Length: 69
Image: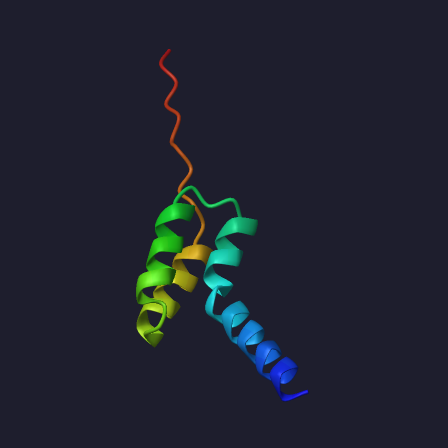
């Protein structure tokens, strides 16, 4: 029973760790790969995790279209 509880705890912790990656995936971010790399390598620090989450939640810039007349 303890093994199952331990595995469940690890699963929940990994799910929380990869929240920025999941948010970026479901929001179809253009920089998805960069957010994943940041989350994997710096997500263990609180600052890296928060930066990755903010980046995943930020709105992608829309290109400006200029029409010539």
